[in-house]
Image 1 (cartoon, rainbow over the protein chains, first blue to last red):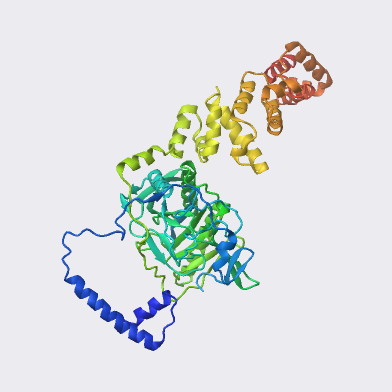
Image 2 (cartoon, chains in turn purple, orange; image 1 turned 180 degrees about the horizontal axis):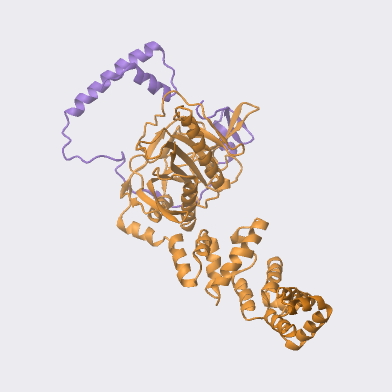
Length: 98
Length: 475
């Protein structure tokens, strides 16, 4: 698999990262090297008879009962908000797609 | 050219659990903003989600009620995207192993039964609520809704008209209500639908380019949006224009849709298995327990009502379209000798009164037993059906027993022949012209005389006796 500069720019875009041209270039090279290395390791592994892993945790069926407990106080909730107003978190106006 | 409309729905239903999907915060609607939040649903670092067992059970219940296969081993995944209603910058959802797959619902449209496929039902968390302010150029966020459990029901593109979409959506809603999986309060956003719609020349094999309209929150809006978008796309094609694949916002107040500005690249959600949660195994024993908790569903109830209570299909379909309504009917019908009369009262006066007062059936002031008593009073000829309407009105307002009301206001049927005869004779001597008309063959005038007798008896005279005596006297 070849990593292109477009791949890096797309990933940066969905991750809301602003990369300079040089960064895009060096990351493309770095990621290509890393991928190549991974591929070499992986293709040398014997995976015959190994079941697919659906989830990282090997636990199963860990559940909570549907019982209410206290939530945080509003002022506690808003503590990490850089701006708040009338009990709400306040951010610059957003509309989907912008 | 003739066109075919193709519609698929994605329906989000908030589950009627006490607590959120991954934490113990309450899901109650309408609280002060940001008062039902904790480190888990706020996405604070280090907080670990733990799945609410009820969420799995409700999803399975819905799947069984919609003929789905239940996935024995399913998992949860991260769906990554940046939007301020999502504090973690990802939503926990299900990607490749949803809890339910490959179901269907049969709907009836214009007397024909049609099957609509259900691709999948998966569990996920709801996002917070955003309030956009035009004037201040900012957005306010309330995270009370973040983490409220949802199921998303994805249909196959099997619907071809707004009637079919309406029939499917209403049927699904009824099932969610019957199984008590969701309260389906659309005005509170508990049930919302996304519409995927395309059109193609009739008979064409390949689907046209589709558009998506998100978060429709009333049946009326869904119907109008489907009709409007079908028309818009057909007009585009007629003009030789192409349909753009896009998300459109439906403005129900203006009855129009407009495209949302979309970014150049498609969404890339970068799904991966949620590392903070483990697999869900639904074994046979659990499945059996959940299956046993499913009540009689609307279709079965309808068939039973037709058989057991001799209801016409139309009445049975209407009454079973709401579980509280069906329960009310059955509570009355099972102790009544005349279930059809109960159904008539419900379909007529009861529903009218509820509608006028903006009352839900669960808040009806007349108990099922009292409605049965009222019907008994009519059937045993203690009151006339005309008087029964008056009694019904008083019952609605006072919460008194119908027989007490009849006693108190002296509303019993007047069936004493001598008294009625005296009044009949009075009416005959006061209306010589009508009597002559009848004698010369205008039989319809007898109705006028009946009316006069009824007026003199405040509507209480037994109409059979009145009719008989009047016929005799005018021969």
